[in-house]
Image (tube, rainbow, N blue to C red; front, top):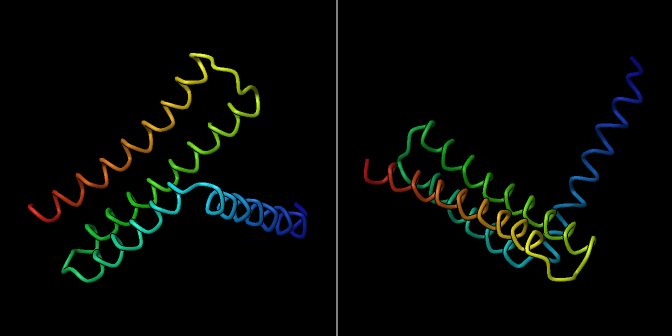
Length: 118
């Protein structure tokens, strides 16, 4: 195994991932909005007297919303690249991506509800 090649590969992966985050931040209002929601959620998770497990759950689910938003962006960009013509399959693909974000957000909301009420 070539250690230098592996380090370069990890560096490239990190650079490409960061480029994806920067692109989503620049082009996707919903990604910026969810990022702000996550910053506020994380701040609240550290201010409230939560257990480490509760805090980890809140933080992880918040990040999952951002993950799903990035996946949704990838789906939308790919569909639009292939064709901007109206097609029911393209609409369903975009709707499914959007639904994935919504389900992740609901999971985060449910976690907050259970932690606060529980």
